[in-house]
Image (cartoon, rainbow, N blue to C red; front, side, top):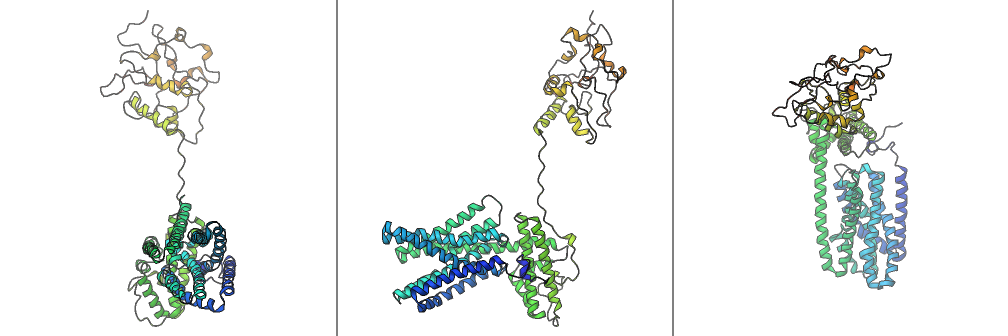
Length: 599
């Protein structure tokens, strides 16, 4: 398979052949242009058609050159530019002529010849013509979106399409002037070809700006930008056509408005060029560690003067092939910066980014090799952009591909855990209840106060957990409300006083553990040490399920007391916000101090 040309690589084509859709498009546009020329020949004759074409040709040549001058820093594919001009001169002109003629024939019987002509020129013509010209920009947005790298590209495509339309339309106006009155054609040429030749390019430029914004963004306002640009184009076009009914005074007012819009468009182009230079200075320095470029190369690529001096030096060293190789190297470096700009805005898929970047890097190596394959003449001067410094253009070794920046989409954030507010509220309640220290128990040692929190913080995720059916798990609200009940410092806990006399009796044999578990596994605190004392406290949540074996502690570093001592009452401190004793680990209840035993 033969090697691809630099132009094919930059355009993202898999072969040097022109794509079939572009060929079909050019054929369709050419047929429409032939239909327009045939109409001119049939209605005005050969002489008037040829003279009108010659009068309209200088204007379009100058304006096309000005449009291409804006596109020097990052030239668009020539096939796209040719198709844009052909669309305006073929499809847009024929479609607009047919629809405008049909609309005028419908309005003239209703509103009369004079008013119908004004409505056709001021309402129907702007809507129809700007729609046909803007449709090509929509096709570019849909099929060749990555070719539109900014406002300048949108203005270039819109300007060429409008210039093709204006060229064929001017032939019609000039022919009409020649046929009606030979002296009247001078005024028409003066207005349409000299004073206001940028009418159609200015109108369609509004749509081009909207399409450029839509191609360079991912927000929901892309459609509104395209519609807004089209509406602005229609309004400017309607203003010019409507002001022409008032003579030269109305045209002067519309001309001032269009002049202001033209100044604004020039500022947009200047600002976009500064943006492109900034992209070169932003996205190319990360390639310095790989050896692709150096600081002197970035400074050379960021200015038009530096680029021109580099091409001149390459021509002096290696002739025309050397200058062409330097131009390809500069264009590939610019495309690399624009590719990273698309990646920053996330308007290009990751796979397409890597394939395009590999092709661009290969083009830069091919351009460098093409320069050195031709035996250079004796060096007359050092490179003007590098001098005695090192340049990536003269690098002959392989690039350090592992030190190149890559494009990775931002990772999707994980979903939040279920119930975060509830967990935070529970931890805050435990902190307040423990005197301001998170997880502090009655003895002052930090420990998780809730089974769920303790399991989430300290348990091993690979260790299977046994389902629990204790009272606190079944009704956590009641347990938390029982812990947070304020009590006097010297009064016994409400849980230490039985609510039913039957609960003060020792544990019945029916509640003993099954035979698989020895009876000795019962906690000593489940039996009352003295019959004259108060009934024992109900078992803790960890002991409420007798069929569940004792589980090892979740945190090996946290000791668990096997024989808890008597409950200690923690009197209220002066700095505590909430009064009440601190609930400690479960244990046998003790009688209140200085309280005689019950008889």
